Image 1 (cartoon, rainbow, N blue to C red):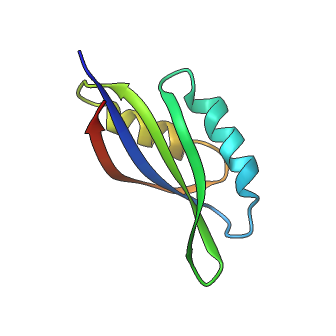
Image 2 (image 1 turned 90 degrees about the vertical axis):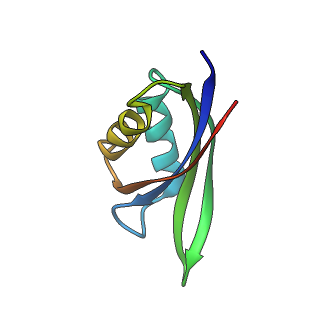
Amino acid sequence: MADVAMTFSVLPEDPSMDLEVLKKKLRNDLESKCKIVEISVQEIAFGLKKLKMVVIVKDEDGQQDMVEELASKVNGVGQVDFEDSSLV
């Protein structure tokens, strides 16, 4: 079965939160369920920032929901949005 690379936007609960700390929390909580390829900080507008997270999961039903659910449970995460996916 193939793998899928999925891209998510992760917005912090508090705009002043240290995003490096949030990146570490996401890695710690998600690494057991999926392979994290990249988590980068991106500017949105007016000084607001978000994390762009790319993960690799098995090409099976429910994987997108699983990643969104796990990421949204991380302390400090305000919102998780799916952006894109592609076969690896």
